Image 1 (cartoon, rainbow, N blue to C red):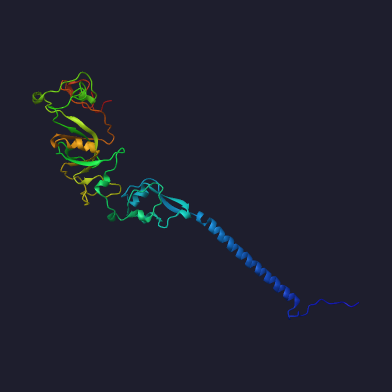
Image 2: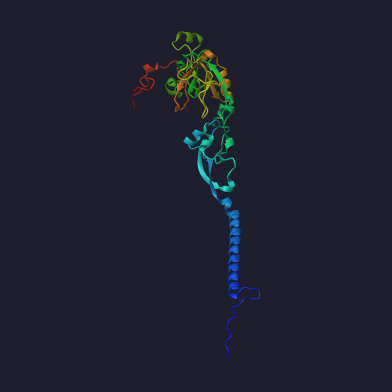
Length: 323
């Protein structure tokens, strides 16, 4: 029987059959690789489109209210602005990248909590206009006004008052026409702490005022009134340099005061203060933690404090070091 050999000769196109099969395999692999590459590129683009905005990026936000005029460095020190991360889709184009972006600049307005910090929120101090009325913020929800009085060193605590201090405002010279309020002048104990006790005490008439040692009656008008400015030096706003009200730099160290005191008070309080003659006003400095309590008038018939065993000193019988 005759044996037929395999066809290994040239094809009709001149290529051996084995070489043709190799080329087809290579072509198929190449096409498959191209398909995989295209599919991968497509799925990657879809993934980027779906999840790219969810990428978290660094951003700076306001953690506590930043008052107008606060320097950028202060916001970092006081942690008024903090670093956090948010989805990329929420990232503002003009957001600051580091605290260096606001260094040496001040807030152009009050910044609310959770605001993203952007470059337009801070500017050079010379471009941020601050008026004196910016200091007239509400106190206990009530609008405030500024009113000035003139006192000498005796009536103005020897010129030791500073912007931001608190004082009690007294009025002297009320003896001849003091109204009948709170048991006239306070009754027994009126000079001891402000609570009216005992029988009503009749106010001395004008002639009596000339004869007794307390020849003018003094009563408290307001307690713990805040000083907004001394002369033309106001309370400093956050981040503000030590400047006078006219914008010039205030002198450092003790300065001789002219006795011009400006208070921040409600409108009615300003009306009452303005009703006093300048010579009637007497100020007494009180501490930041001073707690106002009602004060009575003077009992003209009571013993002097040093004659009263329940008083003796301004601080009670035990004195300032007693219990």
